Image (cartoon, rainbow, N blue to C red; front, side):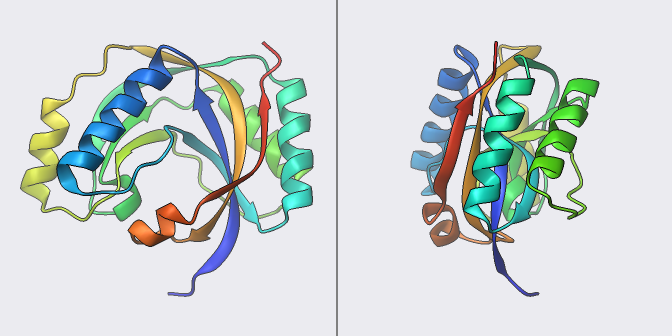
Length: 176
């Protein structure tokens, strides 16, 4: 599988959800010797062009109000970047944000929007993942997101070094 550098466009949760999820991520990273990262929902992945990312983030942030997503479940999978995650319902606002970013970045990639917020990046056996997913209770049925970030990263992200190499290239607050 070929790997390449891309720009991931993230939606960042507002407080108090940001603090809660960051605490869970920090705790799991410490317990399982896994990388630390900021809580986020990936909205779009585009080609590695920082100038386009900056334009996309600022245009989308100006056009978008706060985004509220309904939390569905704590899920798990065998994919490194989706070992343990909060699954969110896809809504019209998120689809529009995805489209705005894709258009502003002039990017035709066909990123499949499946909104989730990862809590842990680590290879684990299915039984351990399931037990962990069952042990976490998110205190929110809905989460409000109030900012965007564009992050340069390797795709697909496969290990701790990949996560630790992520770099924010643009950020903006949603218009409120």
